[in-house]
Length: 395
Length: 229
Image (cartoon, rainbow over all chains, first blue to last red; front, side, top):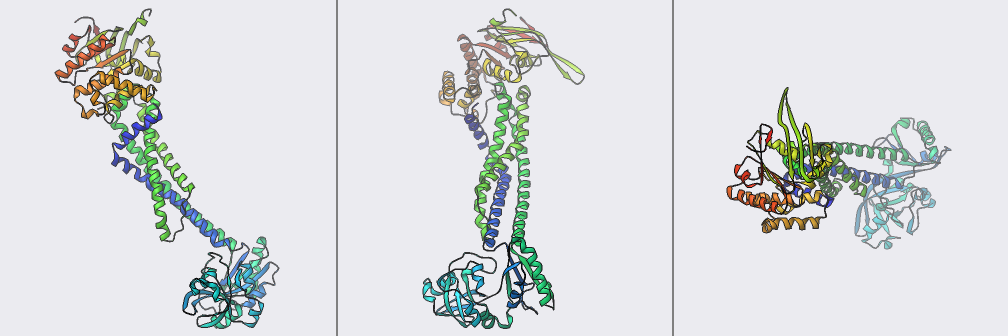
């Protein structure tokens, strides 16, 4: 019998038992949707990690207080200077970050600000689009000037950012003159986007915005990737020497490379966990398919006998029941993939990053077909092996 | 077997023994039967006489314990499982007591099945099936499913399915067993007409009225075949 006619016959058989077929496919639907989502979440997590760390050089080392809030013996700009004494460290900048109200004429925004030294701009790829960058003179004179992110400039001027250059804004009620606007950089790492941040000279920020509360982070750059470990050791030594009270213990030293690895690892663990769930669901649903196929074979025993009597060969009966099982599971797979697509917005709503992908669709469908073949084979074999005589006699 | 090629069926010394625990049950005891082309034969016997077993062996659904069986010159006992399926498909047309139509398929789809298993092109097979159904007066019933047809109509669909592939032998097992007398009469008329057209027909039955209509009658009792009662 040709495949087209066989498929027709199988469709007629399946459509006769719609409810049973649907119930059988449910497990496959869930399993396939899970596999699709595993891939989607994996891809989403990967994309998120990559994006978060895309602007972070793998040689970057962050030194920050181990606890939030006030610290007895905080880091200072001087620590950054001391770090530079190490041969393994190419750059080290103190960075202060905070949140506050930023006002310009009638517009106000609740945004982040950052106090930086001039070198921070290059090492973070901050490029001035209009006006000028912060420079050494601003730093030395504690100039109350600011370069703001493109998004913040847009918000404050209601869409005509260029007018703000040369005008003054207030950050937490302190006046700063806007001297430039950075080009858009997109999302950055933790602590909000640079596009939505006002940057001021480190010295000015320390003095006018944070004062005694100043509790900076230091961002250091190892000479190269191989120097990261030695650089961390040097930083630890320096902290132990200069912060007698608690030494390096009171600070966290993070390097971008190991953070990246950790983030990737946790994303992978999540994926493997979900994949295990999906495989279990598919096995269970496969057993369901096998059960239903056994019942179907039993029900149609006399029909199988008739088919054999009019000339159906063993392999044709096998093919018919196997394709029927695969058809059921593949239908479940297709519905599962569609369900997976529909679930992605829900995942996004709960802030789980998920990206649909061709590999997710293929993997889901392949798994559903494999389930059908694997669990459909034994019942189909039973059907094919029936002796025509016994089958015809079956009541 | 010098003259086996003239015969549709040439079976000799067929013995069939069933093992029932330690007990041996000899269902067919040295049965020899010969059916020539265009024969119209009935095997008459009561239930338990071994006639169903004979029918299964003649229909290549079962294999005898010993004996020889040539169907249209082919040595059936040497055929593989797939070859037997081929023989059933091409050489034999079955007509069952309970019709054995596939319930989810229409009359036309049922009739076309043997041709599809033969690998014949669907269009061509459909054409042949329509022709046979029309011949049997079911032109307006082709799209109906078995449960939408009367018993007599179902049996005619089954007959159409049996003859659609032009087999050497039509093998009917109690073809009137599930029919009322009117439909039984119709079925017998059809068999007579088919025989007139040259079809070889063997009917297995316990119905004496059926037996009276055939050209050649053999009796089976306790596993043995007799030419006359």
